[in-house]
Image (cartoon, rainbow, N blue to C red):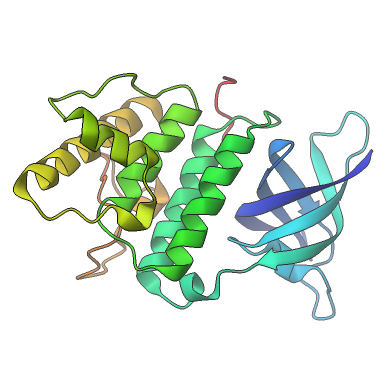
Length: 238
């Protein structure tokens, strides 16, 4: 079967001598695992399509009975250059990609999740990250994945809860003491969920010794010193 679909690269890993494996979140087919043969060779033409955060229209071939498809071509749509040139933005973007990889099952289409990730990356491309960016994305992904809460918890106001789920990420700049307290509570909700649901810590939540990076995600898990090789993990189907 050959098809085309829009997708965003969540993760890539070298495979064999010159191939790469990627985890791609697509608009019509959900999260799928693909192989790009020969892209590590100096003359390869599809290498850019295997880079994390690449948003492109992919031409994909899947053999009958196979769980890993092959990328045969594509057209790049966005590469988010501002994110790639800023450490804070890049760390946050990769955090979103890892959340998508760890909290979504394979082969389960969800245009809502695809558009959520694309919106987050697009806003992050044009505006500096704010402290509410990461928890707002996590809450919305939880909701799209079926883990969301119907009503606010921890005495968070309904208006604040609605803003965290519906407003543009770039507009979530809170300054009042009440809003900052509510933001801390939302972050705590996300932390509890990730601690309970994930079987291993998120690699993008490690600080790797960086200092004064105030926009990095701060939902630290209890386990530390986990190896830095990301493992493809299938979430339960929703």
